[in-house]
Length: 126
Image (cartoon, rainbow, N blue to C red; front, side, top):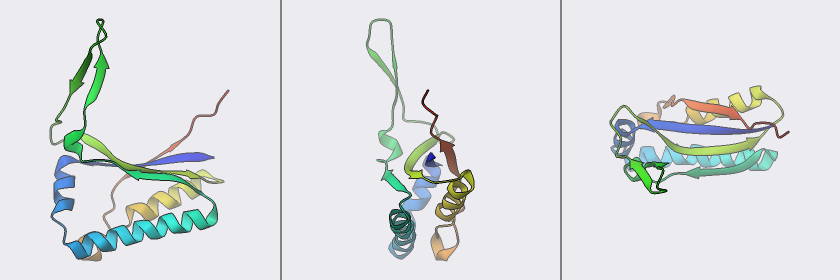
């Protein structure tokens, strides 16, 4: 079963991340790279990608005349998609376990970030 694991945050949260020390950022990223390596070795890895800064985000809607209408920059409380993992695992519990590992990646001082990771199964085709 394929799942997408969505890492979301707020502009305030992104600003806090930018204030982390280089050592804390490197430790955090090392754990995430280790998770990716483990998933690749187990055959569960499909894809991952971080996204550009939230300040670049726009929501686009069409109008009757076909011209796009954009919305953004968003208020502080608005959540942004920061990045994602696509995994192919045998059970929902395995997807949850992987999301838990991502959420537990260290933040400042090695304390787990406990960032919420939304777990969504890909819809069945039919």
